[in-house]
Each structure stands twice: as C-alpha cells, then as structure tokens.
Image (cartoon, rainbow, N blue to C red; front, side):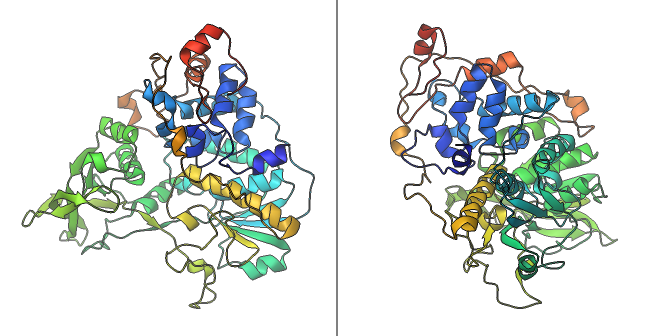
Length: 514
C-alpha cells in the first residue's frame, strides 16, 4: 500500500525511466506527467508527494538533473519536467484547498529532528505519515533553513514557502524554534525527554574563506551570511559598488540580491563562463539584470582605504591550463598581471562548509559522529545511520553543500530507516539499490519522433521592474501549455518509449506504461 510506496528505494529491477534514475528525490516522474497529460492534476500532486513534500519549492529552485537525462533531448529538447511539477504544485496552492494526505495510525514514538531545512522537514513529513511523532528543533526564528535564509525571495517567495511548510506541520509535527542544539540541549538530554531516535540535519552554514590578505576588513561579508541577513530582515551593510567572488548559484543569488538593493555589481570568477557551476538560466538572468562579469580573475588581496574600510580588491589574471580532478581546466596565474578593482563591498561566495562545533561535549576533542576523513557527519550511505545506533543524519551535514532535492531525498531515506529501526532495530536495504545510471537505458536513437518545441518558462515582471523589487521572476505554465508539454513525454520504461507516431496514431493516451 501507500506505506510501502513512500518507503520504496529505487531498485535496478524496477522499471526506471532515465529521468527517474537521475532524480535525487526518486520521484515517479513518468507517472505524474501521465496524470497531467490526462488533466488529473490532483493525482499528479499526490504521486509527487509520495516522494517529496516540497513541490512548490522544487518547482521553483531545482536545477532539474532529471532533464539532463530525458530521452526527448535526442529528438529536440528535454521535457520541461520541473515546470510541470511547478504547474501542479501551484494548481493545488491556488485551488483554495489542500489535498488530504493519509497518515498511518499513531505509534507514540517521539523522534527529534535537529534542523528545519529541506532534509529535516522531509524527514518529519514522512515520519508523521508513518505514524510517529516528530519534533523539529530549529536554531533560527523560523523553519526552512537555506530555503528561507539562503534562497532570495525573487526565486522562492516567502508566502509560497510558508504555505508549503504549514501543510507539513498540519499533519501533526511539533516545532521548537530559537533552540540551539549543542548549547540548549544535546543527544543525551533528548533521550531523557523520551525521544527514541534523532535525525541531525543542520546543514552547512559556514563559509569557505578566500585565504587572502585583508579578508577580515569591514566591507567583506560572505555570501551565506549576507543572504541570511536579508532573510532575517536585518541590514546587510552592502554598499553601492559590489564585487562578488565565485561562480556558483549562491554567488549569483548574492549578485542579483545586491542589484535589487541598488548596487553596481561585478562577479569575479577565476575560470571562464563555461566552467561556472551556476545554472545557465541563472547566469543569463543575472546578466539581463545588469550584473557584470570579470572572468579569469582570482583575488589576491583586499585593499583598504584610509578609513580602514574596503576600497578595492586586487586580482591576478588567470589562464586555463590542463584539466584538474573536476574535469575543468585548471586556472593558472599570469605573472605580473595584478590589477586593482575599486569597490566598497566584497562578497566571497566560494562554497559552504559544515560547522560541527555543536557535536562536541563541553570543549572536548572527541566526537563519535564526525567522519574521520571529511568535515562532515559520518552516516552509512544507504541507511543514514551514524555510529550511534539511534542517531541518523542527512542533507548537507553529511554530503556537504548540495541540491535541495538531494537533501529532500535523504530526509525520506532517513525517515524510512528510523521507521524500521523503531520497529525492529534492524534496517533492511535491498541488495540491488539503483545508485548510478543504468548504461543500457541511455540509448539515443528514437524512431518515430518529430520535433515538438519545448514550452518556455513565462517571466512575471518586465526587466526594468524586476531589478527594483524582490517579486518573483518566473511564472507558471497555463493548463493548456502544461498538458501539451506533458504530451511531449515519451513515457519511457527501461528500454521502451511511446513514439510521437504511436501516440498520434492511437488518438488517445494509453494509460499503461511499457
């Protein structure tokens, strides 16, 4: 039944289309798209909710790894999988009513969840659906983690996030905010309070340093901290001429946020645009909004003015050499090419790291949960169990900074493990887990398919208005567009698909999948 479905882990014997193999949240993508093509939006929503509770969020912020594996790309362009998710998520939110979510009978088992970001919220949602009593313990004033304090409002409006979180809490999830784990309570105390298991999901909130002279001067503020301040509604201290250092999505978010706060913004990145980890759409949006880019430039020191505040940043020009471990060509400095770029604010956004201080007892040096090799929590990849049997961990605190959908996938996996642990203290995992793409499913020859142009994401406000405010930038497809887009899906199995010809000849949508 539904309990089995929400706990199922992908197995290599399942009929997994390539998009499903790639989704870190294991969403049954072909099934929900099939429902959309039939106009059954409610069942599409419920299908997605068997795997993730945060569909409004993912519909807005997911970089959609699934689409990179969509077979349709070998005909014309991938199906707009994420726009379809967003369409049905918005349909539910705007319908004025919430679809009922079935939960198992109460077990009375209390589980503590440390951190109310995407992993913690997801774990709480699935534990509640499995009949347990989760309590989310959050150090900040409100739930959401990086969704609230890291992703700007123009990508994920707070009222949308609030509506989605409220739906999870309404199932019967307790919350304690402004409680700092490690300071206000620890694992022993949670045990004394009757919690049978603990899920650690407090994210990766510390910022990596640039490692250059002057980076502690006033006027240097790291990207994560700046976005958190915006989320908290406190002043950021960002000036009028800003340099953002980095090339990932956090760097882009801080640049576009600074533009909206009236700054002239330049992004400095040590490789070329081609190597930027940020999503192409995000880079294009930033450029459209007036962000300037300085490529092949690596910061060498922060320059202070007479008042001791940042007055500029010195950088050295780079050239690309041989590929490094990441497969990208390694940037190497050009001797004697140092240049000073004038600015009043520098925002390094070159990566986040995990702060594990909360796990150490009273300044002790031993921590049974720390991974011996990485600055992360040690958890078994398949079960997310830590060296302490009733303590589980997931999300960025285990993987390092990763995608929202990856944290969500881990939250569900942890809920499954905790549910099994509470029942028998044994956590069974299938021996044929699908963890990588199955090569034989990745063929590129698709007969009988013709070009059908992909739907375009609508933009909600004009370019001039958009940089003046934090209103949402991207919009939702219409119902007609969504149904057309859903009909571009080839309804793939492992090695089969329904060609456009077959679909057109049938004249109707067959409801079974090969």
